[in-house]
Image 1: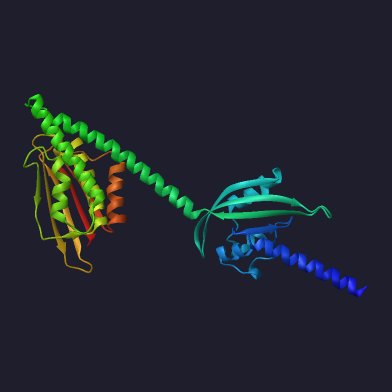
Image 2 (image 1 turned 180 degrees about the horizontal axis):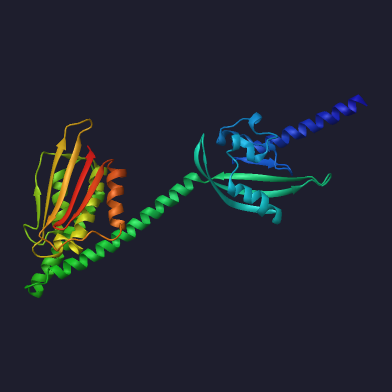
Length: 329
């Protein structure tokens, strides 16, 4: 009889260990909750992902896990409202800030289990950490929004160039002027995105702004000391200059024959060295501050702050827009 009991115990223990081993092979965090929503089993991935150990987890009420970190409204709704009405729920989104590990976007799938012998009920929760996926999707949305905005601005700019090059010119002169400026615009965009190695700031300014200048004196670049830009700085600055010039063509100094733009810069001797660049518009139409912050303004601010690590000030003066950019070199 003892031998039979020992064999039975050994068999049950081996079966339990095998079951736990199978659970631990699941790469996503997994919890097994009893009918009172207490944790019966958790896999290794759960412990490592949420930085907890077995003593903090097993036999704990799910909402008490991590000193109440799992008392999440979306999780409560899933367990108390959704699961009782459904045998399974797949990819229920739960978002939460965990004090120890930061913000998490989780896709929770839940399945109800009923034991055939004693009719006990369990809920299996599998958790997919979708934080990085959601970040990539958000970044993609920003990029697509930027692409749509850039295409809209580019088409508006081409239309503006066509309108500005018609006055007092023959068809042949108009064609040559338009195609010349359009080709320059294409080359400037290619150069901004294909830059390899360092580039001189004055060359970047000239190359990027040449297509926007209707007259020889429409845009004046006050050459300062030599500043070399890294490729990522060239792209970011080209985007900012393109945005400012496009707005100037549509609404500002370059929308009239008398308008002018002056650009100057200097460097500030601090650690690290900083570039201070000023864009100043004058002699254009009377300028009114925009009623709301558009995508273009947000793009400039985002590019300066996030890509260049600097700051930007936009002053909507009646005489024309003045923009000051300060960024570390």
